[in-house]
Amino acid sequence: MNFESNIGAYRVTCNQKVFFSDGCVLLNLTRRGWLASAGAALAVSCGRRSYSGFPGYLLVATAGENSVSAVDLADFRLLRQIPLGGAPTTVLADSSAHASYILTPGTGAIHALDSQLEHVASRRLADQLFGLQSSPGRRLFTLAPLTNELLEVDHRSLDAVHRWKLSAPPFSLDVSASGSAAVSTGPGGTVELVDGQTGKQFRRDFAGPLGHVRFRADGEILLVANQQEQALTALRVPDLEIIVHLPLAMQPQNLCFNADGGQLFITGKGLDGVAIAFPYRPLEIEQTVLAGRDPGAMACSENPAYLFVASASGADVCVLNVDNRKMIGLVEVGQKPSFIIVTPDSQYALVLNERSADLAVIHIASLQENSVIPEKRRAKSGAALFTMLPVGERPVQAAIVRKLA
Image 1 (tube, rainbow, N blue to C red):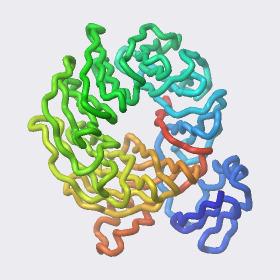
Image 2 (cartoon, rainbow, N blue to C red; image 1 turned 90 degrees about the horizontal axis):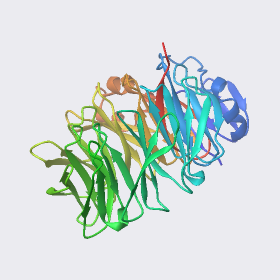
Image 3 (cartoon, rainbow, N blue to C red; image 1 turned 120 degrees about the vertical axis):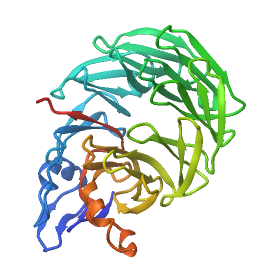
Image 4 (spheres, one colour; image 1 turned 60 degrees about the horizontal axis):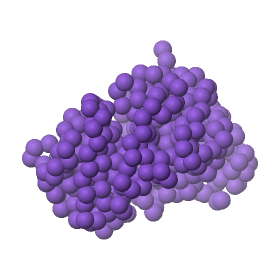
């Protein structure tokens, strides 16, 4: 693999060297060697301005490897890779339990890490698993696609304490603050819900395929990416009665709430833009704004209120100001950015680049500074890219774990 990117004052070429603009050569390693040395290598900067990091860790699910990568966000260095015996796809951090949970679908297992990132438990629950969510009361939910089941899992023993039969193979899972779990069966065209209070199961059939499901912040409305209608469909919880269909200008493939849950951002095939929905009354699509090329995965910071939109087939992230709906700039990150997460202090946006196997760190305050410069320079906001480091093959998802005081 030969990945090359401009990072502030230096240029990185994975199978050659790391060069800084003043001519100093930092490394001469293969990509594997660079991965092993990443903690020391990219934390160094030849005369660059430094910023304080976040007091926590980033756990990265690397689908191309049988381990999860741990990055120290205080100084942006790779701590280690934690072996799991299977390829991970989902990481879940539970601050109330001081634990993290990792899903390895191919082995049908959930793994638990303690607050020190030590691997303390594993439990095989099915031949294959898909999706992992948590709810109050320290319950975990996951899906068994081969047996069409929704599983409720005890967070301590990792035993399945309840199994609900589904009408078709599951596609998407979401869990509300009240503990209700909703499942879309995708091509099966059904939405199924298990009420968190009563355990009663509800079902709504649609005429065609569905995408992801997301609960509104109060748990009273379930929002469904309706692929058949190219719309966002709102269902009442728990009986799943249809409230409204909201037509969209694109196929709804990616859904992202802002920090307070008052706005929902939607991207998908058919338009290089983001649809902005208000999930509270009136339920409506407020507007659609342009957002780079082939917009895909998204994440939102709280203060400042910025929306980060990855190019699904490209190598950059478009940044929008949520308040005035204007584009701040584009940040070049890496090949095929597929997941974005923002640190809780809204200081950094962390971008996983699936094809180039690395993590791009965007310094959000630098975007604020750049917002006052001329429009022609806003098009490429290179100063906001704080650093990059390799994290392992095919990084697809991540979670932030706070360090204990």
